[in-house]
Image 1 (cartoon, rainbow, N blue to C red):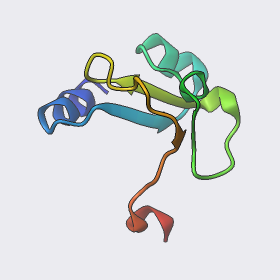
Image 2 (image 1 turned 135 degrees about the vertical axis):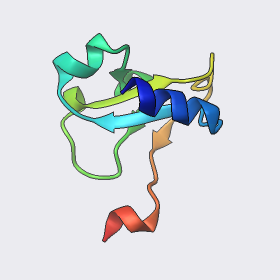
Image 3 (image 1 turned 120 degrees about the vertical axis):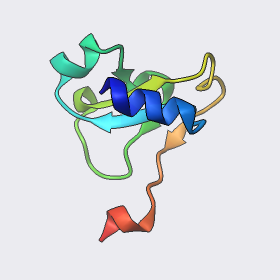
Length: 74
């Protein structure tokens, strides 16, 4: 995960959204995306969809549904 976060920061991504185990991702500093009024584009339980800022305040004034590239929809 640290490599993923490092690469994403270097590429200028403001945050990472991820679907996964609550105990694991919470330990890594991920927060429930719903706390930011951000939601998955597919049905997912609230307690497994997370988000983490990579830049300070990158989620300020951000809300809605995450969109993925079409490659993830096939």
